[in-house]
Amino acid sequence: MLRVTNSWSESTDSPECSICYDEYEPSFDNVTILINCYHKFHTNPCLKTYIQKKQIALRQARQPTDKIECPFCKTEFSVKKLTYNNFKSANMWPFNPNAPIPELSKAPKTLDDILIFKTILGANGNSPSILYETNDSYGNGSNQLRYYEPNYYYSYYKENLGPRCPLPHFLPHIEIPQLTDPLEFIEMQYKAAIRNNNIAINDYSNAREYSTDFFEKFLQSKGITMSDIDIAYNREILVMTNARLVETERVKTTIKQILDNAKTLLGQFKSALQSIRKSVSKSIKKSVRKTLRRLKGRTMSMAEIEGGKKKSKKHKKHKNYKKHNKSRKPRKK
Image 1 (cartoon, helix red, strand yellow):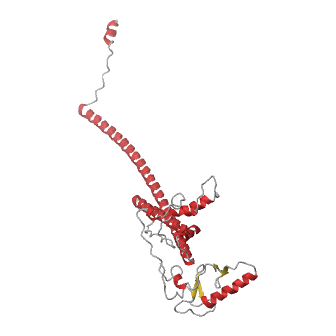
Image 2: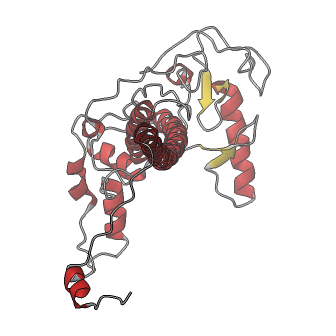
């Protein structure tokens, strides 16, 4: 995980000590880097002399002597956690911009494979640190929630954890579809965006867990001490995973909006097509009826031409017609 190089990039960091303005030796044995701000200085006598003077001034002012400001940017750092002559071990990404960013592992087929515990974002807030903090917030011996010691939650971690957090997983590139693309393609891209977002959630949750004091205590119980470089490295991984999570949320939301718009347009098109079909069928029926009437009229007119005038229909005689006629008296002449 560590990468030792011979020099820093002059474009990203000064080749001179900011205290004595002398260049560093090629071996970099006498160089200390401040992890909070990534500035480096000669360890002896520059940085040590500067810290001693600052601590004397703080004692005279009756102030804590642990927090000292960086000689270059005035960012505070802890003297207790400072490791001198740490440049070679710290000469890695993200401290050295020339060092390659660690390669990301492939995304697993099953999302549960990347979880060493159920994360607060991924599964009901069951990460060890969250469980402990939630439990302890009620107070020891509370009746509302049974209190457990921190060691009770260590079983949630795997036994082979190291001082640094596992690297995030590689997220496949997702092409944001257009509204005119087929609906099946938009749905496929949306499913891929959901998967990327779930992976990013789990990676960020893991990185956040490894940045807690609870995880640091767990490593101490296993005989592993996290250095300030390890803590800073985990912090950078947390920043990276957070940025990836925000980006996957943006992509998922964008594709979801496109998918909803595509479904709305498709529904409107289907309803319009259905209304057109109804109107067309009505007009066709109407024209067929008109055509049939015309054909019927033409047929009647042809019959008149061939057989002369149409015979008028004979009125049906009433069944009592004869009786009625017999009963009538003949008219006198």
